[in-house]
Amino acid sequence: MEKKFFSAVLILLILFCVSDFNSLAASYPDTVRVGLNYGSDAVSSVQVNAEKGLNIGYYGNNTFTLLYQHNSNKPVIIRKDGYFIRTENGIAEYSPTEGIPSAGQAMGPWHLKIGGTVADYDTAKSIAETYNKSGIITYVAYDGGWQVWAGFYPDKKSAENDIPVVRERLGVADISVLPETSKRLVIYDSAFNVILLYGGENGYLQVHPKPENNPYILTVNGKRYRNYIEIRRYTDSDLTLINILNIEEYLYGVVPSEIEADAPIEAIKAQAVAARTYTYQNIGKYEKWGFDLTDTVSSQVYNGYDAERPATNRAVDETRGQKIMYNASWPRFSTLPQAEV
Image 1 (tube, rainbow, N blue to C red):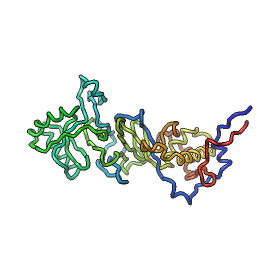
Image 2: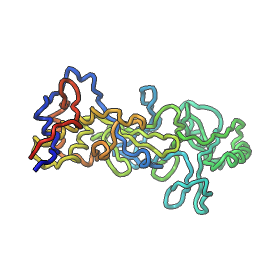
Image 3: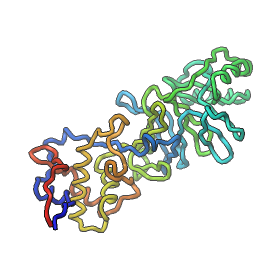
Image 4: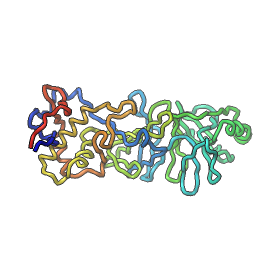
């Protein structure tokens, strides 16, 4: 009886040379960008925490710029600056075309900028705290520089109508309206107090575990991942979440999702080599979304830190750098010979 032979990995290991190709190592990237949420699966907000705290900043011009250090294991909530309603149960998004919900505090993406740019976060926070004593609730913002903003207005008219009141109470003449933008993000603490509004023009927001975290992991919407995440807002989309990490550590979360951890160690090693090969073959596949691979069967299943097992981590470590190649080229999985059994 003729059947298709599905164990492509084993055929490749028999037919082709498996090598670490150290001489070509410089051409291989060290990191991979994995899409956790994107497109129709994008989210309007994300909750992040790490045992020893977080560093929050933006990545632009090939540099990470720290904006805020979160020195607690309690989560921060990052949401798009959009249309939300706040109730005693939390914050939920609403559509402005359907009207403002009757229950709760409505929040929108229009703001008032009060004064100019100041030196740093602490200066902006001190100014905001002084303003708040006058009954005008203000927030620290970063939009090309440190600023102080007021209000989460649902539209331009509401923001403009509030300018005379703000001027009178604060004694500040320089007040301008900031319109809605598809790039802005709001960062809260676990009690839904605003930590920071980020304008989004300088680069993509990233959340890193602080260096003292060991292991170096963070929790994203209840699931643990190594290294750090990047948060992107695209026009007409919710938040795209990307886990950026070393390729070998990425494989720690892939291999046990593709093969049983109690399988023979040589079989697990074969799976590790195949997974590594697939990863390098597909770097940049989802470049338009800002990442390389998804965490689903659309690429290869990746379940992060919680999926890791000692046996599969060992297999990744013992095959470190090994890929399947033929005449220094990637094999064509779609043209593998079929075996009869």
